Length: 235
Image 1: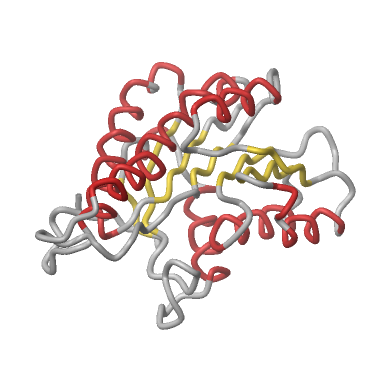
Image 2: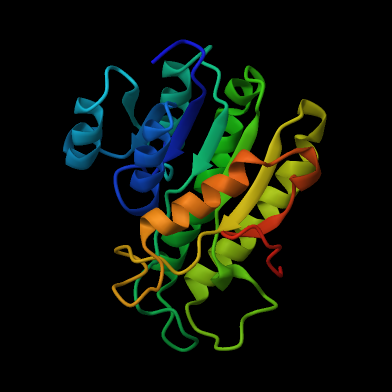
């Protein structure tokens, strides 16, 4: 790994899509900073790290705890981040339909899925500005699309992603002068702990498709809601 290798910071890198992003970017020769709540317990990340010479570093970061994000950003002070991948997220509990909503759980989902990625982007904005690429990608969901909601339910998860979409659209406009490209991406329905065993896409298929799109992103794409295959997703 040379000093010229691009650097990606991935939240939620200990499992699912985040872990697969880490694996694939390592194979492409990137320097990977893999962030998660408890790196000491992230055995799969340690296995990835053992297969390379210092090209993967873990970072303790809980997206729901502001001081944790601030400490992580301070630890990487002065480090250029070419690509920020906000992958951390939760589905929430089963009580997400009108008449049985668990409001405490809803607040938790919003904290992780909406406020968390915005906090991360704010905290690592200057790290992005140190790089030439300056790309921030946040994973969202088709379930956050108001246009495509025809079944209802899952209020906590849906609203967290809809709010996230708006926040990142605002961020794209706010950060335009800093030349930071900011998009949200739907990864498809993926076979992970969250997506379930019936999902049609494997993590490797989803991530490979998204990486092709991410690699071609430019200033004209900032503010878009993209599908994993590169198409524009309805808001």
